[in-house]
Image (cartoon, rainbow over all chains, first blue to last red; front, top):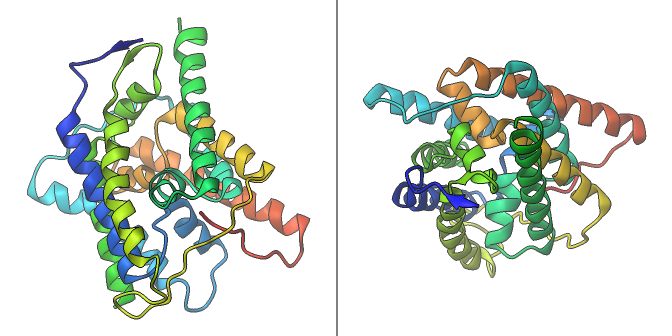
Length: 144
Length: 147
């Protein structure tokens, strides 16, 4: 392993992380819910009366953030090197996996770890390990 | 009121993803590439988010209702089962292929990224696959417990 010091952005990472934490805090302190994106989005697949508007609003907020940012300043770099067929396969895996696993990076990784939920810690270890392993296979076994 | 709070939380969440670099798939893959030129930034994103999040969850822990009077709905299942682990492993493979997880997928769509939209559409289709399989398994399925 070698650390890519030129790519390392500790200040924006910490500040951005704290902003994500603030969003999670806002959500639980006001609405009493876990800010888990896969679960909030997934709940819309099985709509129930009275359970729709807050989900739509949260999703709309996530989509509105880059739109508002773009009005005021140039968006930070967004680079997607992955090909579309691989992205589609990845999207399917993420869509199915997060629902079976009951959460994603936000619900398990941030919220669950914040409240020391054993389930979420286990889920986070599992998806991190699978993510590391997948990139290793793609970049160093197949791609080399 | 709850709807407005929800929008605000989603909006702030999106800003955090943009500031932190989590909405940049190339940067996420740089973090997941332990054997290459490793970019440790994402670990600090987690640290920052968990530090603030932990304080918030400690605050609501003893409360039954929120500041707006909503019931606190925090799941309490503790069982680590095959479904949780296998589902998370499958998610991790997808995350490792694209460098995109559900929150950033929505931010990328809002940023007008065509590739982001392709990922998001596939992710929603994946949700559909899950719903279909669940419905076939149990005609009257109870909603899956969520993180």
